[in-house]
Structure formats: C-alpha cells, structure tokens
Image (cartoon, rainbow, N blue to C red; front, side, top):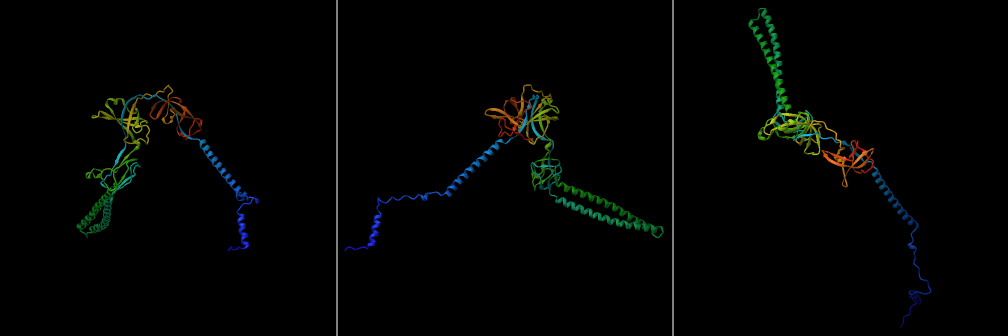
Length: 428
C-alpha cells in the first residue's frame, strides 16, 4: 500500500531537486570582486610608508658621503725635520769598548746595627738629598735618651740643693767672722765654717760638670736616635733595594751572612760617563777634551757626541791598559748605568764641507713605495712626493745623494693619509 505524502512536502522536495540542475534559460552567477578592492585610505598609507623609507635612505647616504668627504678633506698634522748638508767625518784614531758608569754611586748603609722597621724606597724611585730612605728600630736609643734625661734632671735638682746649702754656709761664715772679730768665736769655728762653704762650692762645681756630662749623654742618645733614620746622601735614583723590613743591618758584615750591610744603592744620573780601557801602546793618541763618538750596544744606530774627561794616571800591569773616562755632551734618559758602549776617539781637526751634494735626513723620513725610495718634502703648507737616491747610513741619519737639497724640510712623522700635493699642518 502506497503511503501518500502531503502536497506541500511534495512541492518542497520537487523544488530542491529542480534547483540542483542548471537551467539554460537562467543567467550564470558572477563572482563578487568587491571584497578584493583596497580602500583609498589604506592605499594612501602604504604609499606614504614607502616614501618615508626612501627619504630616510637618501639622508643616511648623504650623511655617510659627507663624513667621508670631511675625513678626506681633514688636514693631516705632520712632524718635519730639516735636510742637513753632509760633512766629512773626523778621522778615527782609536776604537775601544767599555761601560757606562756613574761618578757618584753609593750603597747607603746604617751607622749602627739594628733591625729594619720601614723601607721607604723602591727601585727606580727619584729621591732628593736628605730624604728618608729607611727607619730602624729605635727602642733602645729611646730608652737611653730617657735615662740620660732622667740623670740630668736628678743632677740639676742636686745642684739646686747644693746652692741653697752654700748660701746658708756663706751666711754662717759671715756670722762666725763677726764673732771672731769680737773675740767670742774661736779660730777653729771660723775655719770649720770656711771649710764647709768651700766644700759646697767644690761640690757645686762638680755637680755642674755632671750636668754637662748628662747633656753630652743626651746628645749621644739623640745621635743614636738620628742614626735610626737612614737618609739619602745626594739626589739621585734608587737602582737597588738591598734590605727588607725585619732584617738586621750593620755597617760591618756580621752574623754569617744574615746581616745586611746596605739599605739601598743610589746613583746620581747626572754623573753618568763612560769608562774604557785603552792599551798602553795607543794611550798616546788620547788626550783630555778629545772628541769621541759613543755608541751604546742597546742603540747601535745612535751616535752620542762625547769627549775625554780625564786619563787616569796609572796603568794596570796585568792587562797593560790605562783607564780613560769619557763624559757625554748631553745626557739622555736612555743612557743607563752599566750599559755596554763602544767609543771611537776622533782627530781634532775641524770638519770640512763636502762638495758632492750629499745631504742627510733622519732615517725615518725615507719611505719604501713599490720598491722606490721616496720622501715627502714639506713646502708652503703642502707636501710633495720626491723620489730620492740613497747613500750610506750615518748612525740614525740617511745619506741622500739625489732628490733633495740642504735646507729643505721633510716629513718624519704623520704619514697616514699623505699624498702628493696634499695640504698638511706642522705639529708645533
């Protein structure tokens, strides 16, 4: 039996089935593109963002280019040195070697045997004359000072008592003399009072001497206290610290090597000179004030002008040599005690000007550029690149045989950023 459906349900079902098939007469549906449209406000904000980043990039590029331009246009500061005409070297008469020695060098020691309480110096320290270098244990000296002062006080008090007694004895003697003149007192009483007064005067004189002896003991105790302070005997530099706090020091060697004999070693750096041994066979070539060229082993390219200060008037029979002391024309902080040095004794004839056009410049002025030797000549606020021909080295100077003239100025420091024709400022 077929079950019947309501009419309205059939109509709805039939409509759904019909809509599932395309109809040739009804138009096809079009896609909706309205959702893809960009609004005008969004389009304008994005355009402004790109423009903002574009201008920022242009500003950064301008700043970088301006900084580079300013850096390139910055005037370099250089140091210059004059070009000197070369002179013939003096004739070398004799060569010798020796060491730098100070004329004033002292191992500062204490005058007493005592324990070190403080050491106020260290190696390399500059000290002035009279400056305290160390303090020693002064407890014993302080006690001696206290005892000496107490003795003097007691003696002074005794002297005051004697003077009072003497005044009384003098009064008694006057009375006795009056009584003796009146026939009342005997001669024995007068003699006894006279003796008492004279005895007190003698005791006062003795006590006064004892007071002076006490003063001398006080001065001795004070000297002992002063000896506990070690001072610098002259102005100089401490080159060795020979004692430490807690060690015993003594002016003589004692204690089996456990007692120090010095506090510090002091050198007067203004008294540095060269001491060399010259063979007896050549000593006739050396005389006082003779010019000398000294070259330190530590600085082989540095020629130091010097002269002979004195020839020690004695010879060493074992080495057959004579000591010669040479003083520097100008001292330099690079010159240190006990440095090895080689000296050349020169003839005393005056130097003659060379006629071959050779000039001298500091060796650091010569630059190596692609295998060519060049210098930068400074003139009227600008530098000029010059190719030069080199000769030999003369200590710290370089011979120039071509490319420069005496009186020119060349750059010795500040080569960074230099180029031919560039402006430069001279360092004052």
